[in-house]
Image (tube, rainbow, N blue to C red; front, side, top):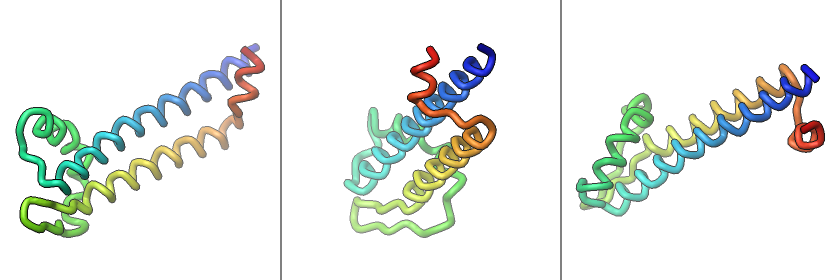
Length: 110
């Protein structure tokens, strides 16, 4: 029974990791689209920028910003999205090395 609890916990961790990365990357993608379309920094747009700045900040300066009029193609955001996907994938792979678990196996055991 103990092994089953471990597998369920690892599988739930997989789900939590992908959920968190999905939220972060969705917010970053919306930020990217807003900047690319030249959205004004008001209301929800300003709030989104404030929330996503800590996730994009570590990548500022890697590439320049391509701007045309009001539109900004922010390479930093794209790099951040790829980075967070790779980190999530690495965490999931590490968990799979520690204790291989499949969704079917966990559902069958519950």
